Image (cartoon, rainbow, N blue to C red; front, side, top):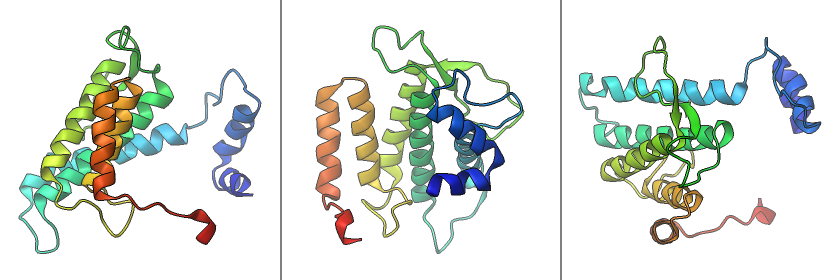
Length: 190
């Protein structure tokens, strides 16, 4: 099965998957790595490095500097949305300013020791990154699904607002995303 393939590829995953499936109190042993945490923060390190240093690189013929910055911001926003919802409390407007989420690392310095940000701080950063990305991104969609375009950012914002119970903004962002990309993949045809 796919899961056993993951477990065999990553020795830490075997025990952690067993803990997940049995609702164990602790998912990871003290000596194990949390692959989700590590991978998302590694991705954010790469994104932050790009954002910190892109102005030092002369514009190329193959890429547009603003588009690359927009993609980096979109990736960081998505990563923090996942991180906040796995490792933080569910967004609750009444307590979001005091509920803890994850450290909000916005610089490519791995030596920074940051406290956990509040759920509100993380959500505010996600929204800020998305709004900035929308101003910078060149295309609504890309040929490859892992490259973010404006449609993806609108869809992410819709989901963020949905989690915040901000129904009007969630609707408006979903509508904007669907105006750019409304086709549905029929998985029966794959």
